[in-house]
Image 1 (cartoon, rainbow, N blue to C red):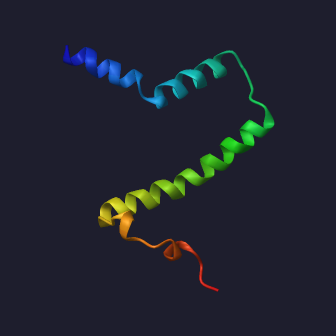
Image 2: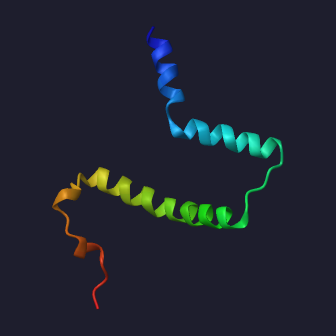
Length: 76
């Protein structure tokens, strides 16, 4: 029963559906509209910075509820 629950948990993750759709689109040579592609490009470009930021905060043990929004805004 434990393996079945683990398999069900895997199918509940959104990354699985994204992988499946990506493979289908690639296999059938389906291209997305330009606005969708440009939006996905922005998300892709932002991911590297977001992942590095999250990794750094996890390593440092920083808790977000104690941070001020002004800490992220550039000073003039």
